[in-house]
Length: 393
Image 1: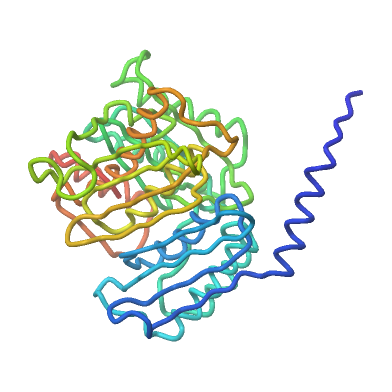
Image 2: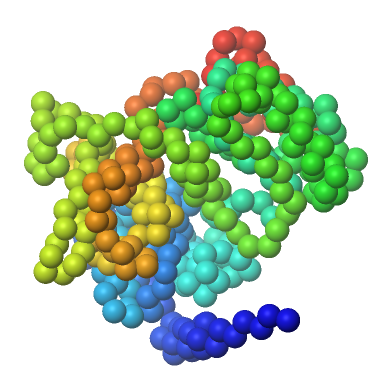
């Protein structure tokens, strides 16, 4: 019998919980100190992943973050966000303000979602403010592979033929790669698919569809999972799937200067990484076109690559945004080799450019109708038959 004793883990968790109870997070929403923005200030005990949790709450509300200052040295975390709504106005709805205050606190107590977030949702009725988490009520299909016209349509058609009711789907394409999450339930039982043998059969059939076009040597992954506890943000999961699929390998860094005007007026994505010997931080500067959810995408990349942000300054001016991060690796290691710095550079560029709506003026189609079996499959089939490709959704 092998006995493993790790008392320090339990002690650390209990101590962290005690500190959070003694010093609960404080959220201040200020409409007076800035003429054009609402200032959201958060003070809290520091914890791994807290920055992403905070940004995630504001991003789910479709708020525009024009400026942010972050500091998390020691055991305390302080963040300041300058936010506006989609129309460029301050936040004056008291229900929305209360929701933000409670959601930010709930995300700290529950580790980024869970029951606390669902309770907070009731304080902002009439608004679509539900966290965009991967569903824990339906079977999830995660697929990555080579992108091609009609792929998602064919996948959806196979699922319908196999008696699966498609409840929702999200997909990204980047650098000729695709990542998609499709939520399904059993057509006859109107519930999740939990039978291991049926899950294996579905995976096998979907593998055949993908392999028919890609070939056996192409890199791909098809995975069906039964509902599980916990919440994962759907867009963060897409980032993780793309990263695991190594879509960043085909990215290219622009030449030119980070600070000031880029070379030849380039408005592409620029990343520079420098070593600060005095403070022992790596300083990451990112300059790119400004757009919604830019901060969320960048912080996702840093968090999932196990980097800790100790200080940061984010600001936008006109159509461009500048982000500066002072980081260390979670395990204390440094970016000692050029290949490590190059990988971080390319991963940041990929995370920023995966949302293609700001660089690819495609047709956006919103469909609102009564749901029925096979509806999504029928819609995507029409796209395929008319030579249209889905680039994100």
